[in-house]
Image (cartoon, rainbow, N blue to C red):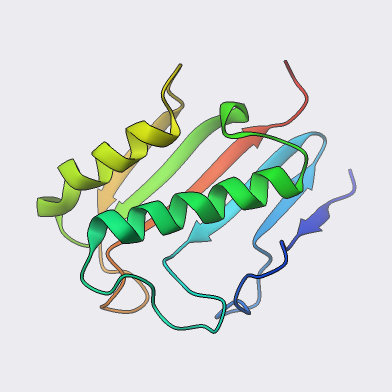
Length: 129
């Protein structure tokens, strides 16, 4: 099954060898998104609400680049650096998934840089409705 890389315009160059997303057989796999500006700087330093919104906008843009929508998301992998931020992440998350909620998990862990507060990776089934 062929895989198609998805790299929306305006994203910073990845920090490692990966694509922002890939699509295979109608399934979009979105890499772990962090709050990174187009120039590679960290967005919304110290602001978990701003970082969560930035991350989910990156997820949305990646899925839309594959002709999908956030309603196509079936699973999210959520990583937070501090569980004290859990409620704030959930408040923003609920804005992006107002209807039926995708399955997900949330893990507290260290992220690739200490200034990152949240990371989200997603799976979407595009065109399956």
